[in-house]
Length: 236
Ligand code: MLT
Image: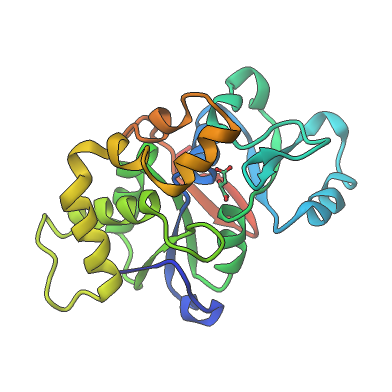
């Protein structure tokens, strides 16, 4: 197990990758699948989103995502989990692009298996990882190549659970940092995450309860997993 916030595509070849973007792509994806979205197609940018949309019937898809935190003009939904309500997403294909989260998903395409994880579906991720023999990489999306507290904390939370609270000496530096951060702030996730860079950025853009919601642990029994470039609920 190791966690990274910057990596080369080739490093993930043949491994299992958990893509983490607590604020907010992982949380929106997890909420959408839990609320009945049929599938999610992560794309790198708007132009790829439009190409896919043009091949589909208008009633079947929703264009979703954000650029620098705010909803993209002409899109149906932004990147707040609160928008992904059952009556909005049920049965729909979501075409999704965000500043960091979906880019990390696309960049991980050489992995054997990709899951999308966050506090909301922590136990589903832990259960899925139990059966994996390949090396697991916890991919912290961060913000434009920079580390973020919320993603590192979730990586630390997974490592804490998997290791039974004792990380072996052989653990890599990235895992040790994530684990240590979780030891320090695990009792007050919302307190720590609400002071993060991205929480501050979001407070100016979207003054709603996203931070509080994204800090809930095990809200959904959903396992977003990738098959042929499409995310579905593998627990469904
Ligand atoms: C991202 O993918 O960069 C984030 O999810 C941005 C956001 O919070 O909207």
